[in-house]
Length: 277
Figure 1 (cartoon, rainbow, N blue to C red):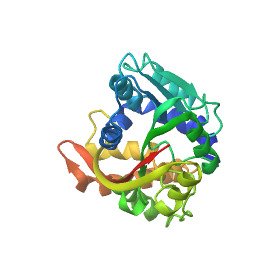
Figure 2: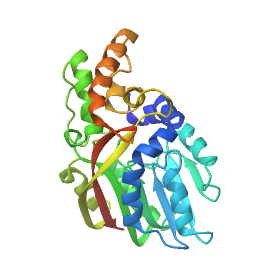
Figure 3: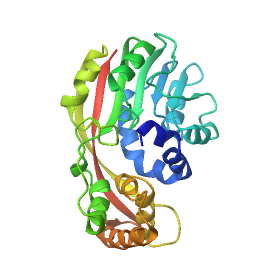
Figure 4: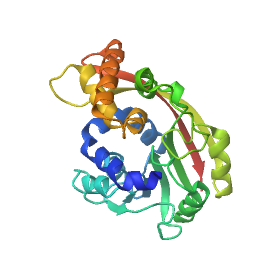
């Protein structure tokens, strides 16, 4: 199934239902990207792949009453969650595909994205469309995942899954998905052809708290989360309950060594991308 179909359907709904846990897990990477953008009072900012609105709310606070934030996401379920999130009251929240959405030209002072930029079916068309929406000289800051093998939040569950399902198939660079922008050799030319200049990227490592809230042991709460969202969850979509149970048992054991201060803590490595419109 195409990424757009999944995000506008079941995948977006699952993310909306688990917004609290995802906010906690992704907060360290979001904080790095928000600090790099350094949104200013009165600015208009486009939040690409706004999800349930955590970064949108932070951007609204930064631009103040004189600014404006537009959050766009293809998932109606996530945008619905954003609309009731405290801090998003003044945001314009759009359900749509940013690849084709008719943004008003030369409107925004900045483009921001926390893991929302790697899923387009036609990235060159998407970024050309986004470039048209930005004012000349507008700032761009995006966080994207580096290669899967550098991210223990993905490799630990993948290894548990492989014990039952066998090795996971590799995907070519640029395949839409969480690791689609892992290689600068892929994304830098896309940005350049779309008209962005001064593109740069720096590696940032983050440690994330993974898991649902509740009274269960941390490894069990983390396993429940990783079976719902992430590369292993995608792989298990069509598997029968017995197989899911086998994978969960192995995943809980694999997560237990990563316990710290009441949470399972797993590492992530991102590219922090900066560019100018």
